[in-house]
Length: 308
Image 1 (cartoon, rainbow, N blue to C red):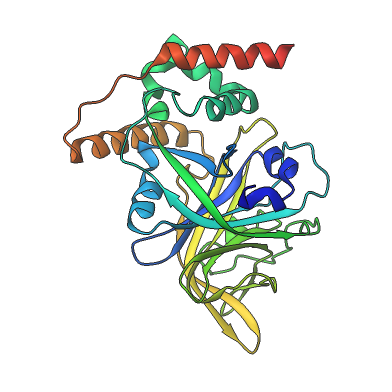
Image 2 (spheres, rainbow, N blue to C red; image 1 turned 45 degrees about the horizontal axis):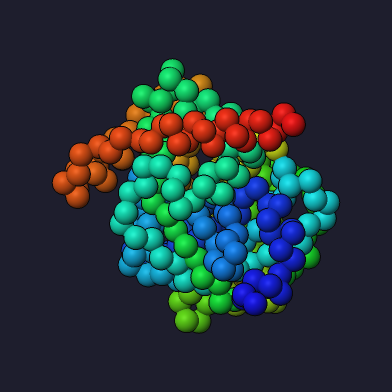
């Protein structure tokens, strides 16, 4: 018996991504989309490349985390419930150069994200080694909430250009995920529909989400059914409540993968390689060699399973 046994596990396993939140140095809940693999012992396995190691650094400082399974794109499910999981995470400072200990996780990625199989081939290996230098994150759940799906709707019809930071980015999505903190300071997540106002983005907070005023953020992201064409934006700010209305007052917009321009791919590739180098240099480490043969074997196995 594990903590997650009361969750609809078939639904949780079918989700291609979830929103994963850690606490930044200043206490701001920072949420990003990621892939998750449920393990037999009831823990959840995630990973992050050295290029995006901030999640790992946050966890080593404060292990309180949360996950929200709320975007069922690619899952094959209709009207899938949302699943919120709170818990504590561990992320050892051990750089994984191969799939050992996370074979099922990598097999899942290769099956669900077919284009990533090309990364292990000779033409792309030299450019993509940063993608396979990973840190493993294990989450032990201690809180579970199942919510009905947010009703489908079109993005809000916002007239003109709103001056709020992030207004243009949020307007392209029908909903966003609010990342806030509860009374204890632990992160909480809820999918909502932000609406720009003169005082910030008005958001609805579900009754079963124990959000309190303070540092918060709004995440929007998308991907296709094969985990391709990804895009994500994080709007950081402060969550306030007045006259029973919750508002996030934005202060900063973060678009780690760029805005979708053709030149973004080159910029992102350069920045990820630089970030990987910085992580290693700060620890006095040489760049490890990726175990390409092991990854290639898993990719080939996934290809065979997909074509069977």
